[in-house]
Amino acid sequence: MGIIIIFTSIFSYLLGAHYIANVEIVIFIVLIIAIVLFIISYIITRSFERLAEASKMKSEFINIVSHQLRSPLNNIKWTFEILTSKELEVPTEKVEEYMGNVEENIARMVELIDDLLIVSKIEQGRVPISKKEVFLENLIKDLIKRYRIFAEASHVELNFYFKEQASPVFTDPSLIKLVVENLIDNAIRYIKGPGKVEIKLTMENKKVLFSIKDTGVGIPQKDKKYIFQKFFRAENVLKERTRGSGLGLYVCKSIIENLGGRIWFKSEEGKGTTFYFTLPIK
Image 1 (cartoon, helix red, strand yellow):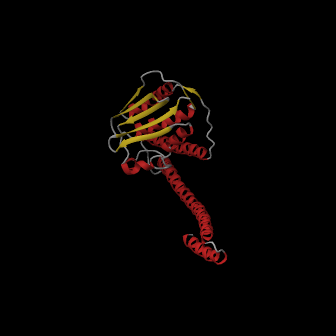
Image 2 (tube, one colour):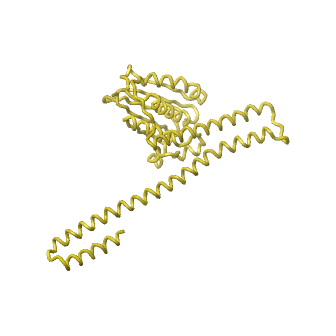
Image 3 (tube, rainbow, N blue to C red):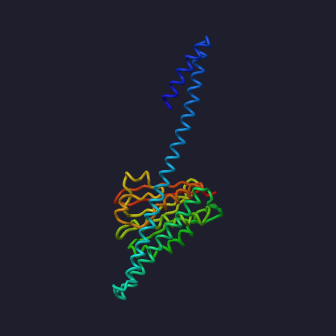
């Protein structure tokens, strides 16, 4: 396109100079033609880039989803082959362990499918938002009760701090619940060995500020810019083989921004991560 613009500009100038005596007018016309061609070139180039990007994302999506579903399905298949085999006798005490493995893998598939449905609704702009007054501290307390057993089983101390009864937030409680669930689940899951998770809720410039700090594996510097992308999981998390679809933080970011807030994080590899989000009171 650059070569075409150059040759078109030269041709336009020579043709204009032949028929128009005023050189300034000729130059002005050539500039207008060059600008128009440049704009057309930019639009065409961006269109091809978007098509290429969409094609690449589609391929990556299929590969990742296939991999994410193949692993639990294979685990379930192998487990049932062992349990139903006529050649192998499975000890009674092992049957419960194998069935627990099946249950865990089914849960992984259900989690992935739920995440994919949410992502699909977000990208199509079909996420229903039903706002009302919500006291976030009450919502967080209820979630902490649910995650207390998981935290204790993982040897993680889970604490919630808030100084005073914050003003209610006019937001969608079901969507905020989904965000907080994702963040608590990640914070506990990415701690290896005994650790702590601290959740804080404060008021700041007519906004509610939520923060969740963990003492987990942290995020490598080179991975930080990708952390809110779909299906992305940091390299150190993959090494630990921690379960996850790589969609949770993408969903959190999309929800918070759709509700008029902002989400960000601070992290140091090996020392932990703190995620923050703000929501307007009104």
